[in-house]
Image 1 (tube, chains in turn cyan, blue):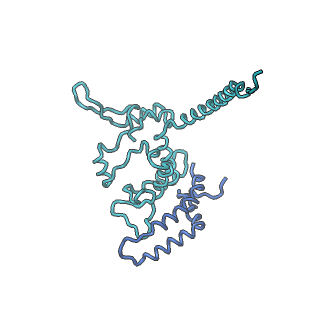
Image 2: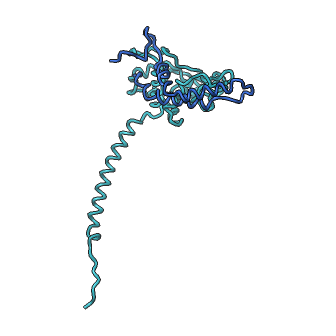
Amino acid sequence: MSLVAYRDLIGVAYTEEEVKAMAAEVEVEDGPNDEGEMYTRPGKPSDHFPSPYPNEQAARFANGGAYPPDLSLITKARHNGQNYVFALLTGYRDPPAGVSVREGLHYNPYFPGGAIAMPKMLMDGGVEYEDGVPATETQMAKDVVTFLSWAAEPEMEERKLMGFKVIFVLTLALIQAGYYKRWKWAPVKSRRVIVDVIN
Amino acid sequence: MRTFSLNRSDDGEVVDPRARLDEISKAKCVKQLMSYQACVKRIEGDETGHKHCTGQYFDYWACIDKHVAPRLFKWTK
């Protein structure tokens, strides 16, 4: 999630104080100080979500050779992304007859190739919801997908509202322009040209 | 108010609605299920390791998904 910053959550899911507290829980490495050394400091809202692994090799090592993709844009980066991620998270099943996946991989029919490195992560009752909603796999997967869709397109609602306004105004402008053109052309279109003898 | 819940089992344990919905949808996908089972039987004795039933498996689960999908989100918040 390296493209999402803590401050993006302000006003969406948390208040400013909660976001500051969340960011401060993390240690961030910051640029050279006056002595030329890198130092660590507690996080600020302007920092992006920290990556759990320092580099790609560490990520591959911790995940059996597979590199977990950055999820900031995943719902936009996969065809039919929202449905795809939901199906992937809830779709771990036994493989069909005749198919076996090697040790360390798991079968998931929604993943291209069928063999995914990530094990099934969502289990019923895995999380306590504050408002007492039953924490089924389906519910948790839906919430994960909602969050990832927001992370990929935080401006989506505003963009669509703006889109409706623009289309509406342009439609009015189109009607007005059409009427004006027809009005201006009326004399030309309604003139009569008479061919007659000179006498 | 619903008198039955697919979210919780009889003793209040949290249970995934998909389990029950898959069962209900099986009735609509009998043809694909039979086709898959026929395939499994056909490759039972196979030793080459190249035969598999992925096609029938996908047909069956696509049919189940098609019936479960419109009903699933009734059981989430």
